[in-house]
Length: 399
Image (cartoon, rainbow, N blue to C red; front, side, top):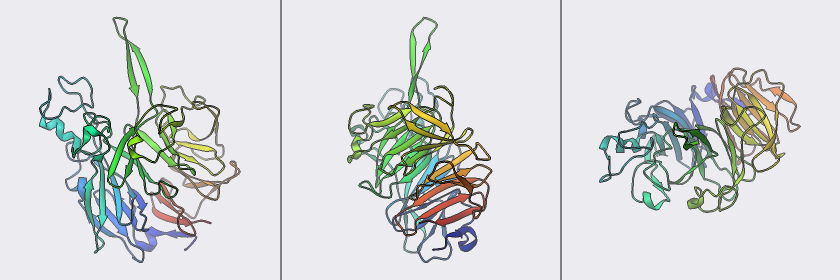
């Protein structure tokens, strides 16, 4: 219940790379190839090494290049994300991410094995406090995928292996879809309920190029997606290197990937880019996307600072850069129920923006200059804000 508590000093959690809370308030820690858990009442984490995709040494030709993030799920469950190298072109296959199945033209066992790399594990807490693999996520809603235990890939056609590296994750903590999990990847955003997923959505655009013969080619641009947030009303906020989008989820998981832009069961409330900062084809390096209780959207860039945005249409917004921060390098944002926005910088520690949208103060009680992750848990009183930095984990208790 302390207003500020250093978990690294008080509970010996070390300096993990990612943290998360499940519905049972078990604290999950990810550190390379090991997973730690602190159960309510524990005085130190218990670590388990070599679970799931981490059972083999990390490497470009292994099951994963490395681990990325951890998020809690239902009580006793967590989800662990991994990174895989990008798919490479192969002879006879025009699409870089296409994998032929057995009996199809250009099939090879080596390329088919690429399905098993990277992606997401569901892990379970055991009675003795250790962690075991529950399932490498593979169940999806698409008919072409039925029965195929091939990790996360396109729900509408299993041949396309586009979501290979998990970059961010967020659990829905309240509302009608409480318990749903969203992950962002090298390509888009995937929705998960329990052990079943639907992949994917992305705010992309088409690059048109002219061939020597005068014909035109269109190439869909979907850069890696790091920015992920859940709005107060349950909207899903996503941002890749160039674009951002606000999605309105429906009650049915199978409707998540149905792309009808402004209509249909899962429409975009907003889809566009920051025209004041860069052109459409230039990277904005978005790393975080939040909406405060005022309704204002905020995006954090790894290179261009924090930007506030209010939509003026479904595809364009009024943009203004937040003044007063000592750095433009932003790694994390988190909106809290008191109307504030916490800002995690790369090199200047943690900052708090007051509900007035202008007053900034540095949160000096949190050790560390590089804020890696912010996780908000509003279901407890006082609420919890987990602040993970290069010096470890600090928990702030709010109103």
